Length: 224
Image (cartoon, rainbow, N blue to C red):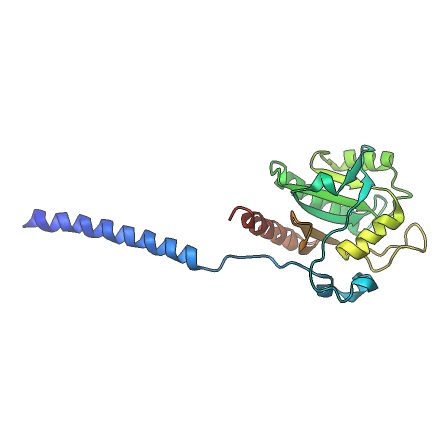
């Protein structure tokens, strides 16, 4: 009799364990998956949005671009095709927010170094000053890894249009002089379809942690 109950006790424990596994799988299947929003121009502070885009509510993507990196190479959207990337705007002589932003971008580079799906992209807002040699010296000083992170210079009007019309990170269109663009400290998370999926304060450690968390959510959306 004792062996009979022992036999069914083991069966009950196995059944209980199996039930727990099944319930967990059902919960995961039915629980809503975390997703990131797709940001449109109407979601931004109007001061950061070009007037031609103030009423755009869908289908916004990052425009085509052609700029020069720290090695004198032409970089276009084709170099980021099929990649998730994090973008910002800076200048090498900035004494205030840019050093913090660059350090935080360097930390992201270290964190994501082995992740081939994610790249980094920084645009100079003073391209007349930030020549290729200056960007190269800055890149070496800050530990930029070329295969992971491009620092871009080039046509000023082109860069400012990207800032205003693609990334929504500038309060001015840059027509008044070499230091005229009032750019934000924002890091912008861009998906493989060139859509904006997140905006983060590039000087804030909590936002950097949030960026990494939301990057995982975005990456997971491509593996479903």
